[in-house]
Length: 334
Ligand code: AQP
Image (tube, rainbow, N blue to C red; front, side):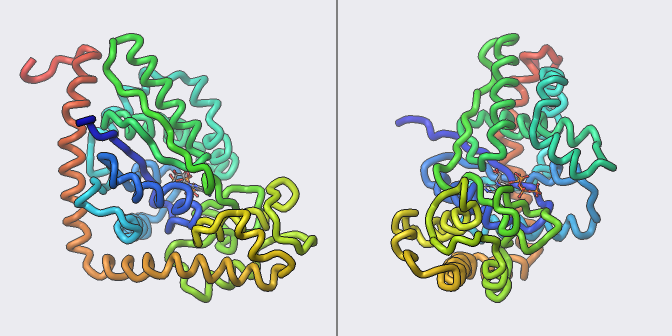
């Protein structure tokens, strides 16, 4: 029998995930756990590249872990854990940093965007973020990395680092492939529909959080930016707001874009926007309920985190040992 593919992906606890995170990445994680060996991680080490409040950060991390379980990731099928609980991530990030070029990090779009957003805190962690992400992936001999479009460049960097390392030391690292959905890879802001929906957008009207209640969801869609032409048709260039809402509706209901266009032909935004809100609310209701349930028992949640970390650590050890050996570190037992 063929060996199962290894899958890794992660999400930062910078805020409650949005429907962008869910439709672009997390929903695929749930599907992939049926056919592959999957590790999913709350990448809390990545989350401190921007300033945060420690108590709030702890709360957001627990909430995010509960949300991952509520979306359908289960410890029976996947390893779900916190990055900071597995020290191999940090160790490998240092090692791989010595095989990553300053020039290639300078070209990363996210570094440029985030430094522009936080000009008073352009720390070196923000710059070396993609090396830690490469370490996250390469630490587990990962074959596939399900991500949204914005993370494609970082996965490509991880591939380049792995290939460079292998060129020096032989076939040591598995070279991963990004897996990006055909629809939903970039869900856009409800207020500025030409920009990606971000969970840390300062304007909460720009995104739908997975824990937003029904009223909030309906209100945010009602205020979503569209355009002056009332037709509901998919045309991302000329009608970015409407096309974004159509993508969301199509993913939330399972209807195609063509079916969506036919359903709302001649009906206008007054019908369309509430329908999108209802569809998203129906998608979120079970996630909200389960999240509250998991957060009702923090001791149980933390014991699941610990178990996940033990399994992830055990899986990372042979890979780290192989890498340390290839570089030439003296290891106990050599
Ligand atoms: N708008 C989006 N559409 C589709 N996919 C998205 N992803 C993020 N935003 C969208 C995907 O979600 C996964 C987890 O993202 P992340 O937490 O690692 O950080 P990010 O990519 O920087 O996402 P955010 O929401 O924009 O976070 P903040 O605001 O904290 O920086 C990734 O696979 C990502 O591609």
